[in-house]
Amino acid sequence: MSRWKELPASLDQRVRQFVVQLRRLKDRSGLSLAALAAKTSYSSSSWERYLNGKQLPPRDAVEELARVCGADTTRLLVLHEVAEEAWTDEAAETEEEVAAAGSPAEGLLAPGGPTTPPTGDGARSGARSRARRTTTVVLVAAVVALTVALAAVLLVTRPWQDDRTAAGHDHAASGNTQAPFVFVQGRSRPCDVQRHDGDLRAGYSATRTTLMDLKSTGWEVLEAQCLLRHHGFDPGISDGSYGERSKNAAKAFQKARGLVVDGIVGPDTWQELRR
Image (cartoon, rainbow, N blue to C red; front, side):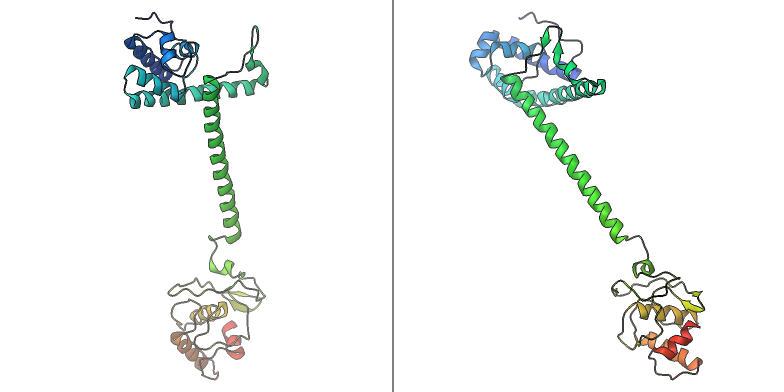
């Protein structure tokens, strides 16, 4: 059995467990590093680094070792994946520490000079790790962009505002500029009638002239329905649609105010509704 060097004390426990499994497989096979190199695509120096915790072996090397030693490839790859995650996390923490120190170059310098960039197996493993980090960054950026876009849409549409705000009116409104009215079957809208500048207003329309009869729809209808209800004449559901019940309420109101009783809301009826 090989007399292995002690693994670095700084090695993550997940990586340590993985390397120990690799060592056991190599010992059971009875193969030397040179023999292992001859049966795989990786050099003896590469296996020396892998088996001593100096460098994490790439996935291909793990698969070849399992094949040569007759081991369970799936179990070994699971351990490799866990170790790879720990190895990547440790590398990321090191990069953050170097960046925080404000001197990235220091992390690349050894006492005897600059560290030689990894080549061969190490380069392939590093490339895969960088690719995964790049993918993560892209996904995070996409989520942030989507969040910003959604926030912009919400700021424009403002779905939390009630119908009076959406219609472009409040109780102090004096004009008739409105957003398009959309009739929703069975949807009752709020009525909050208050007096402004001498007129009663529900906040949906400031009109005094719009003619309304059966099948009329719009903010003006909703305004009239709210004013009729305020005066004690029930127009039914306040939905902005002028139906039979709203017309009957208008007739009753007209009769009570001495107007022509036809159920058609026009200038004279509006004048009384605003009083």
